[in-house]
Image (cartoon, rainbow, N blue to C red; front, side, top):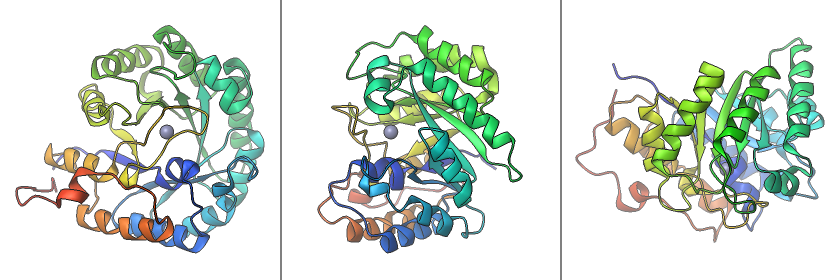
Length: 306
Ligand code: ZN
């Protein structure tokens, strides 16, 4: 039996937030169902942000309420503040993901707050979550942990300090996010080690973008350092509206191909995953879909880990 790696599909959130078109709610629901049926056990289905800022996310409440009915699926929703976290809880989300920018420039652009103020908001969210009857996990994503298109270099010590403050604020999990896709493998190794030295197993995952074509190389570096939880987006959709120059997430299909080829079990059926692109294309015609495995077809040499 191979070791298990969790792939969290973020296409319905990270992917759709910068899409030119708006995917109809009915198609979005069908898409999420198809992703879950392909074996994805965690899906970030949307974000609770004001619809005037990101109209593609206006139906997130409805989407969460539909997704929590899918058996076995962990439904994740992004919330930038307490109000969003309250909405996520009310809709039934199992986990709320809160972005905390490490760089001040991205923090101001994305959240209109300084990083320390956002850490304080996270503390309010964990206090809220703890006070509820139903358990909702709180995950914090350290955005621009590897570099920022606005501020440039992000000193690793700043990321470590933010991660430590988030652990102190009571989050269940910390994820390091390469929001703009500037990371390289040696940097991933070094930062994972430094953050783990500060917060131990609370560092669980990596959120990687493929701007420079190094997304899977960075994932491999994370795997070597013991990371067993990766965000990815079907067809490599994704980007941040407040991070100029960022391109899509690492491609879920290609990540699954990599992981299974290495002997890691993902529980994901690669063929069914590729088939889910058809629903994405239907809901967002004209959006460019990326991905090597989907374009070339699954090679005859491929053997899934299980
Ligand atoms: Zn992202």
